[in-house]
Image 1 (cartoon, rainbow over the protein chains, first blue to last red):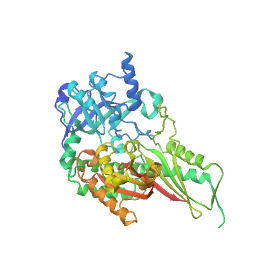
Image 2 (cartoon, each protein chain N blue to C red):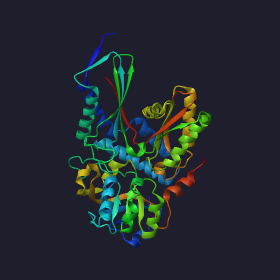
Image 3 (tube, chains in turn green, red):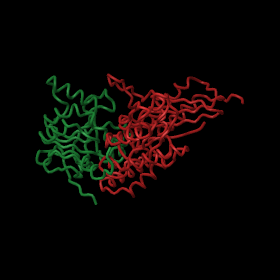
Image 4 (tube, chains in turn brown, yellow):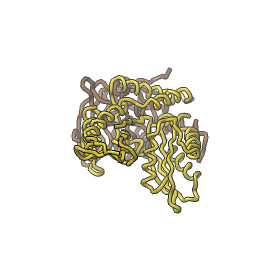
Length: 187
Length: 281
């Protein structure tokens, strides 16, 4: 059986310090959903000195763009999108207090360094498991950038949302560790 | 051979239905291979991921939910019999109307946008349409919902003829390693070698429509497919890039003659959400 660490948002430095690459977690509480264009707008707001649409301190952002909700469902399918596209925007958010990011795929050197320096973690959820992950979402609402449609900024309440720690505050990366263990060829 | 008339409203209806079916129900060959993968995968993290994916695909089919929130750009392959005459409107408009209706009524995500302003088009049009004229009076429609994450990891290049098969092989395997976790492995790899740069890219995409487990009828190309699959499953990428032995469900390659100066190659990567449907009208 897989062992899970249970986390409740917002995250603190102490909680983040106890997370290591490879740890399986179940996240509960409020998380924010934002992807490409929402990140561009948030960073533009920061540069203009305007407030962000939510409190970034201790927050967890989920890189995703849900499918429309069917009647009777709080949200449509919602799996992670590929995270590297948010790499140009993530370090400044981490510096301002962002503690967790959920996505899939490798991050840049700059993001990993920011995770170490300002104590933040990067989690991966299973890409393509959108219908499964939607079941862990209890409620959802758009809080900004509604004009972006699937890319609008959303606030979700999640319960036991499954993810794995990829990049921890100690500079470890689960993809590097896992792949090198099973690699049988070199090019 | 008399001309057979087909009203384009039949195409709209087919595309609408196929867009929803493709997104709710993964093909049997894909599910079967994922189940096999769960048996052969040795990495615990990889096994856990495969269990989640199979559970996800079951929920999607049972509740008619999109299996993945990225319900894709609509890619439509039409093989049109040369004795067919379309009536009742413009064929391409009819395809896009099918996409519009299917994505709206099926609760599918609309993912097309302006390249620079990123303003969402709102109805997931236009579809990318590939048309071939073939003998006969039937129309074969293949609808594919192609996700952005795996498409982003695809590449095409022009190698030197001296690079040969080894050059193509290394380009493909290196691409899979560099793509790593990004395209949602386990993946299906489409390889196109032939003609010009765009022909190779087209062949790579078309190769992804071939069912898992089906080899190219040309024994030479079938050998290339098998060699690539073996190498890719030794890269260690594994399910979701967390490490493991089950990196690819399959590799499909299509090959045609090229220019004496050129060796074009395209790699089109498909995530495990290999969503496509076929219908003959």
